[in-house]
Length: 81
Length: 81
Length: 142
Length: 142
Image (cartoon, rainbow over all chains, first blue to last red; front, side):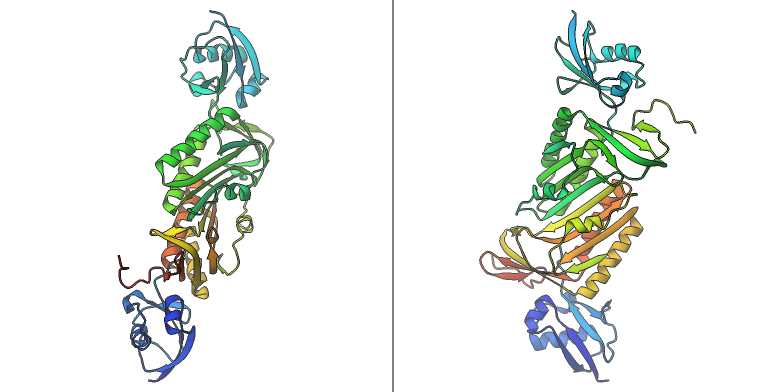
C-alpha cells in the first residue's frame, strides 16, 4: 500500500518544516495519521486536532483515505481579516 | 401682539407656496396655528400633524411661542437616503 | 462631520478622512439612486435639504453613534440637487477597533439620518410624473 | 468574485465592479492593519493564503450570502504579503435594493471569511518578536 503524496505547508507549518512542499512515500492511510507522523519528525507545535486537511484542493475529513498521487495540505487555524 | 416673522419653505411646501421665503406680519401665537393659517391661504396638501416646525434653526414644539423676528421653517416628512 | 453637499460625493477622500492607525475596521454605506421604487420606474431624483438644521441634526446622530458604540471615527455626507440613476445620494463611514461596533454604528447612523435629517426627495418617473416622497396625502389611484 | 491578491486593494475599482442600477444600497467592509492587538504594539502583518482553496471557500461564502439575503452583488478580496500599518487586508462589498440586506450580507461574509478561509496572519511586534495568530500552543509567559 505504498503511495507517493505531495505535501504542501503554509504559515507556521511551512516555517517549522523549513520548506513549502515535498513529496513523500508512505503507507499512512489518513491525513491525521500522516500529520502525527510528520509532527513527530519535524516537531510541529500544533496538535492534530487543531489542523484541518485538504486533499487535491478540497477540505477533507481527517479520516479520509489517502491515495497514491494525492496532494495533501495541512491547514493551521485560519486568521484572515 | 403683532410680530414680523421670516418663513422659509422647502420641498413640497416651497412648490405649493411658489416661493422659498417670505416675511409675514401676524398675531399668530404658535407654529401650528401659523401653519393652519398658511395652509388655508395657500392650499398646502399636508395636514398640520405631518409637518414639524423649526424656529431659528432648531426643531421646536408645535405649540412653541412665536416671537417677533423669529425665522420659522415648516418641515415636511423627511425622505433622505 | 455631517455635511450637506451640492457636489458629487468623493468616497476616496471621505474614507481617507477617517484613516486612523488604531482602527481595524471601516464600514461604509452608500445610498445609490436606483431605477425603481414601489414598482415605478425612476428617471432621476431631486434632493433638497434645510442645510443648517440638517448638518446640526446629522452631527447629533454622529455624536449618538460615538456614545453608543465603540467607534473611533464617523462621518456622513448627503447630496442635494438633481441626481441621475447610479449616483450616490448619501455616504456614511465608520471606523472602529473591531468590526461589530463599526457595522452597528454605520447602520444606526443611516437609519437615523433617514428618519430625522431634514432632507427631501422628489422622484421623477420615467412617464414624466413627479412626487415628493412621504408627502402623499391620499392613496394613489389603483 | 472572491480573490486572493498579492497587490494592494483598489476599493474604487472593486466598488465600481458592483455598480448596478437596481441597487439602492452598497455596504463595504475594509479590514485595516491596526497598531495594536491584545495589548501588544504591532509593527506590521504578514498574510499568507492557500489561494486555490481560499478562493473556492470564499466563493462558497459569497454564494451563501446571495442565497440567505436579498442581495444584488457581492465581492471580496483578501491581501497576501507583508502589510504596513493602515494598509487594507480585506475588502468586502455588497449591493442590494435595500440597506438591511446589504448590511446583513456584508457582516455575514466577513464573519465567515475570518472563520473559514485558509488565510494566515503573522504579527510582527514593535519589540521584534513575531507570532502566527491562533497558532499558540501554550499560554504566553505573564
